[in-house]
Image (cartoon, rainbow, N blue to C red):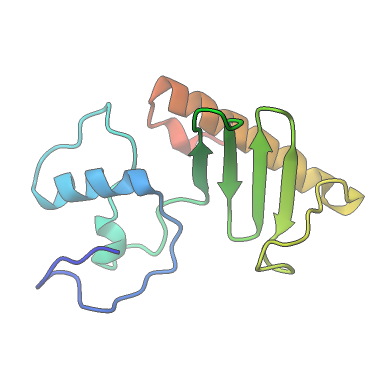
Length: 139
C-alpha cells in the first residue's frame, strides 16, 4: 500500500504486523525528521530496510461512528479479539480459523488466552487515550 521508488522494491511484501498509525512516523523517519513524542505509531523503516522482521506483536484497532457502538480489537498472529462498548465480545483462533468465522469466546479451552487479550486491549485503549508510546509494556 506504499511505494518509495529507489528505496522499496516494487511488489515487496512484508508479513509483519503493522498499524495505520505507523505511516506518519515512517515518512518522518525517511525525511530525517525526529519523530515527536505526540505522534502515535512506529517507523516501518527497520522492516523496509531489512534490519528487523517485526516491530510489534499485535495490531490495535478502534472503530467509532456516530450511531454505532464504539468497538476496539487486538489482532495477533494467533488471535483476533473484538470488544464493543455494549460488552459484546468475539474471539477467533486465526491459526485454526484463518477466515475468523467461529466465535470461541465462550470456549473453556481459550479462557487463558482471552484473559490475556482483554488485558492487552485494556492497556492499548489506555495508551491511545493518553496518546503515549508505552506500547512495549509487559502484559
